[in-house]
Image (tube, rainbow, N blue to C red):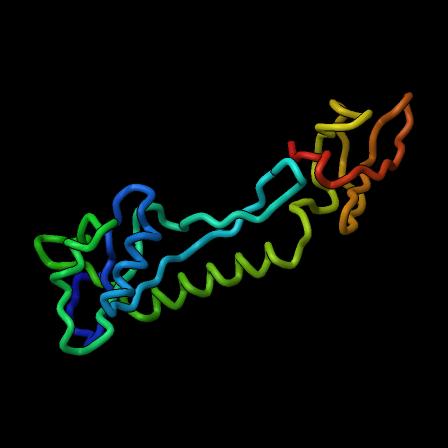
Length: 172
């Protein structure tokens, strides 16, 4: 972050109220500001199996810039969901385009990597079976299919490959 205000249309760092980032983004966009709220996509275990869930990459922070050259940053701090702009010595902190592009790229790459898979398992992961007749046993993932995971279990002193529904397996 720099405090240099030389860019014509700089990005500012906006401090949002706790868990109110989405409200702040919506209200800022309604006022004509350009807003970027980087998100992370993560796997979450649900009753029906594994689901993807999005969460804010930087809790309580978003990036905002004026949508028009004549637009002022003054109304930002009184926007619902916004606490104010991050400032250093009374000067609002700005972010250059390269830094913002790098954050955008990171968020997009992370989302694409999660979207490629049906569930969060990789071959070689250590897992525990959390449901079904083999509940409580631990093993290593050897193969992955769309709805099932093949786990190598040590049963009766021998290694045995067992296909288990993906929703019954948790990472250890």
